[in-house]
Picture 1 (tube, rainbow, N blue to C red):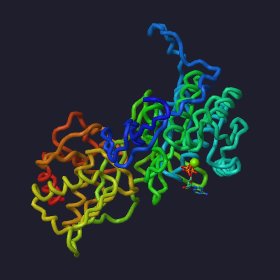
Picture 2: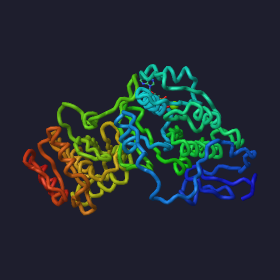
Picture 3: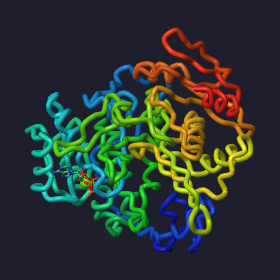
Picture 4: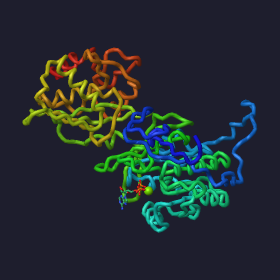
Length: 454
Ligand SMILES: Nc1ncnc2c1ncn2[C@@H]1O[C@H](COP(=O)(O)OP(=O)(O)OP(=O)(O)O)[C@@H](O)[C@H]1O
Ligand SMILES: [Mg+2]
């Protein structure tokens, strides 16, 4: 494609087309094409002093032993990165406005600074005073953190070459630009150009770079999806404006698993790690009420107890409502169908509301049984005791299936003093049932039989 000829790029996945398309044939996103013009780069491109390329080298001669991850000391953050920061890695931190991206990064900067690692924090979004205010509030002030409010990616790289920090933070990619490409700040061109320069810088110097990227619901600025392909790791900070906790989730990691999550709570003093997730997701004390059921889920390597709450109430007007917050909506619809077909409950005239306490989003099929029992419990107005936990995937035939990490889930329940645990009959692991009453069931009918008799 010749220079100056416009092409259209999907801002979700980076698919290129020579005409505008309403729907992306690659990722299916609607209205995601933006115009992208290859303008050339004023012939200045190779101005960097560093050289990222090297002649081909036999693989066995490449020294990998000296590559050492370094830990930030914020356990939940390191966990998500797969054990620490890999030198030369470019890590994108995405998240909705105001979720706490800058907060977590200033806290990471502070932890590293206190270990004697210099940090260059480049903010193009806020004034130096605003960053300083946050740093003071979160007790993250250190002379080892250098703040800059530079907009040009080339200047940022020049500063980084000059000060040789242990880590570079760019907050955010949408608000910096590359004057060598003429691209409009925040546009696809600009984001691509700035990111590739930062990547080349990171690879050549082995300095890890954290890049903040905004996720906007309306997708006004180029979405970080394009960035995701370019960088080494992508972590998202998620949360719910009604709850103080934040989840750090790994969407891509070239150097580690993407299963782990990090849990934090937002306080005035910043993001505080949550080391015992079950503690925050369980309601303490109180009487057992119908529709509330406990289960044990696994996020990454960590089991946690969560509370599922359901209300099934007769529909007053027209079509029954279904509102699901936490589990997957389609999964819940399937479980409602299983309740109707296998247990002969008539839910067609019931509004059903389902929540995971704390608003945690859970994809784990191991919570199926608890969701099903919660709806049943509310529908039949039968309270399930708080000393009971339900674990297992439910099949369309109503059969219970084993899921990953059964043993660890059971152990987590035991740790919280749960006395009765309902699980599928056939499980791979051997579970020690000396301390607790394990109820093994083949299908949902067995579970209901057990509930009728307790
Ligand atoms: N005094 C305070 N007490 C408690 N929480 C606060 C306080 N000040 C800020 N916060 C929290 O910090 C959040 C803002 O954090 P931060 O600026 O790090 O977010 P961000 O993701 O970087 O936002 P942006 O997208 O605007 O850059 C607020 O939404 C709020 O939850
Ligand atoms: Mg910010």
